[in-house]
Image 1 (tube, one colour):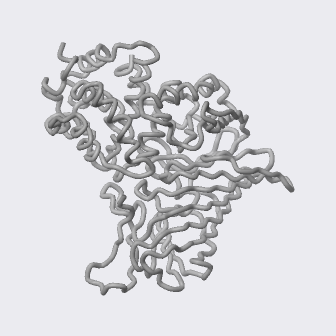
Image 2 (cartoon, helix red, strand yellow):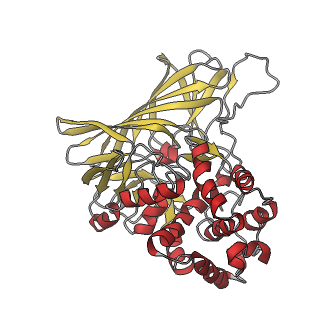
Image 3 (cartoon, helix red, strand yellow):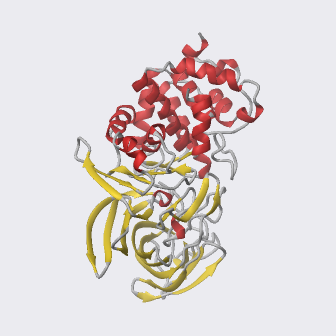
Length: 474
């Protein structure tokens, strides 16, 4: 994700498988069913996600009419029980649930708090079994509320359409989900909209048909995806198709008011080629972009097909496409690990400036350090375990400097290996920031404890030995 205000800062300053918490009671008898936890176990967002199961696939079907703003949904969640379940939770915000079935049998359900749908199946679900939960629901989606980087959730477009977008939460505004990156799963969406509108999502477009004034389209994302990286955008799109050199399909959808972004959209293949040279083979099944006619304050790396705010630029495209490795292919275990996504994706903008524009990154680094020397606000922003609500404060600015300093600390050969091997090692799964630190230290053959403590956990300007390593000391 790249926020407009952050991009402005960068331009003027720096840029010139453990899945699920079982929730089981340790004192219960073995084999005795118990409720799954109401959270997946992330201290930053205790109610995010759910325990007791691992989602293995989502089959979402929605019908949406922009004229009245009503959404009707029918979603089946396939999951594997990680404990004997007497009941379990899904995340769903707003919307009225009409019925719930588990493996075809009618299930009891209740709503708790702002986001919990509590499901009691007709029979307990045995540990290790695969089960399917079908939820039928409808209503007017809850309007997006202010999040850390902008409005998260369901929004209307200037032309009268609608879209779902946001981090860390957005999926539960339009379908029932285990809403945490720790539980990734393949995603399939069927949309039904009036024929004068077009619905675009992530994944491959499998089929589309129009009948009785409505257009039905199916999208399928085969790779495991974190739920905040799913989206649906309904607008009067102009759609352009192509493919990468390896045959990967490219689909770019331009909403009214986004025609000025076509130059950026046409460079997606070039950007992916460049980033593949830095990070390894492109890990997603599709490419392209969804270009909004709205200024929503941020762009987001929705899987394979990022969604761009109206004020995006080429650097934004580089950033969001870098996330296809950092954040999408390998996702965080906890929101405390967000630097794994944002610090690396932000540094890709420096790599682009170096590789495509010939920029001297050491000189750029020195200018930035000189500018922020003495700024307690800048250096006090932790890059790891920064605390809930503070995840996105330093990762786009201080995070770039930290990654460049790491590059000079461990040298080019080790740094190149880290950039390529770490996302490949964890592809389609999750990793933590401490795992990244340990991997970098092993590849470099160095004790990096002091370096990482100073840059990523510290709240003061690093000492000169860490601030000016390698060629930066000259």
